[in-house]
Length: 445
Image (cartoon, rainbow, N blue to C red):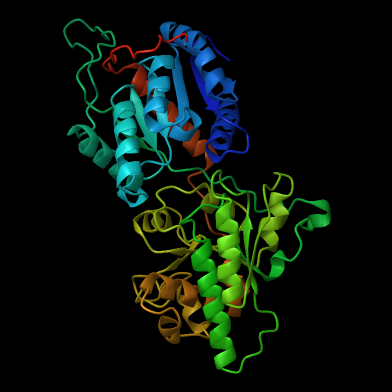
């Protein structure tokens, strides 16, 4: 540590098993290692929103002393609704803080939910020094949320250093402009050598014959698509007189049920049974058991259609698995960022890439036993048809589900924290407007 090191308080709010909280904790640990000597990194651990409120005075003092404050945010961790979450964040955080927004609102959520969340995220985007999102796809949604909620747009900083006086200015809120938006992709820690578990054996039985969906179970996550695609692949094999020996016969949700969605388990179990396959939910998987479970899974599958950033994809990649995903703006962005790490199911293209055969997707075509008949099996849904073709290819050639040894996972966690440090540095030089006080208390509530 040198006297020139700058100071940053990294705030992690929520239960340790929550994906956003876990990301914040991992970022803090990595920053302490990677930025040593240039940044003095201090973790502020808040298990819930009440603890976060109690940290307000500490964070305000840190900012007043010239330090940076950064917090990872999804609205559900900070209040009973989006408006309350935004109010809590504005009450507690200094105006010079930077925030990483996760689960950025998008219209596919439904009109009412989108309107409420878009208004809250737009309010946050104009209240602090800078905003970080995990993809260009999310950045576009955030700009749209600002436009939809307040008729605002753009990324201009709320103020600049006065060239005549050199004055950094005070945080004079009221301009209403959104903060600069920085895109910092989710990091992929390389755990390809970490099998985990006793002798590398998973404690969850039967994963070697399962199509596996990682993460919390909730509507639209892709479990229903996995069930439909698996049933279609098995049905095609039967129609061709192929033995089902060794074929996957179950979809496993590797993770817990999201709050409020317990009824979905029975619904998916019925849907699977109706199609001649099985479905199960493992519940929360401890960190020490996860590597072996990921290594054992027969086919990694992630068919969330409205995804704009995904920790589960990063986890699959980091453990050497190549996951089946439906084509979409975010997926294409990640496929370009980390070539060879995803098995992209593109409607109308079979399994080849856009260029017609180069790269890891080219080998998938020869392994497809289902061929174009998957379109008929999946009905009129072109996305589901593409997922079915991809699953058929993976079943025929399991090597397609594993990353080649030379595939790069960059940007790395070290790259990520260095990019965040640049955001913190710029934010400390950039005036932002100070929001009007929020009814119900000040920063130290």
